Length: 386
Image 1: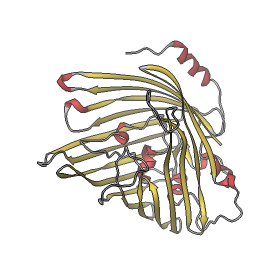
Image 2 (image 1 turned 135 degrees about the vertical axis):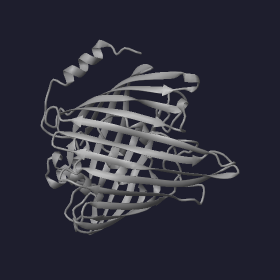
Image 3 (image 1 turned 45 degrees about the vertical axis):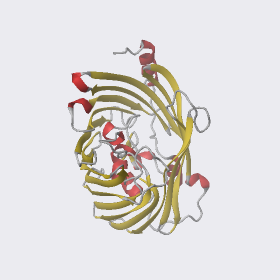
């Protein structure tokens, strides 16, 4: 195990010796409506009931149009700076990106998340700018919303991801790293839950229940912004229920896909339950996803299982939030493909639109023959938005 130098721990403690009163969020919408960020956020980027409803309704109020609005109501800039200790100690300007969205006309709205720069993770070779960075379009869609707060229908068209997964860690979250169950491929597929693809989805909300079905290209988790090369379309569906005033949710997720391989079609699916419980002082969330895919031309199947359980606590109002998560992922139902272990961190917000996150990861990777590797990693991330 690699020891973390004492100076890094001292720096974190010094950072945490100050306090503030405001909460990080998409700054444009806070300016636009004149709200404190806690109106939509439970803490540390997690959405409460108001924030979840605002997300689902297209980042707007019903019947709102774009008349009389200024650019500052629609546009936010954000950046992430990191220090990592894993194999090597390194500083990293991870990303600089643009968030823009809101009403276009009655019922119509849009949202775009665009990375003007993101660290590619490469240590050699070339990249978009020959400096190991890249540009990346994340979400970019047009939405139509019809109805009222108790009953509404939405349609989204563009590059998107399921909103239920967004609420459960694909989008706003405590830590720097997403859970392995969201970012890992299984079997021989390129699919993973954390992906954005071209397509459309339709949702229906009624008295706390939300059902969604989407049709997308399904090019795979490693292929962002790529036009599909086959005629198959993937399908996802979600069903959830928002059951208290804080915005606690229980839900189900399912995904079915297919893409051609040499001599056969690789058909796969993934499905499972998830929940997100919120109270005034703590939150508990988790999910379990079961997957199956066809491995070869003779029809052999591979099974996968992934999940996480995470708890967060408001140790000092909305300013200091420690969190603990346990991750598990098995890509093909074997003892030699299991990855599991805890992730612990602390979120601190020293100013209105920003936060610091210190995160420690301790993951055990099982290998064939009974061998295993232990991954110990510490990261400190500073994020700010205007």
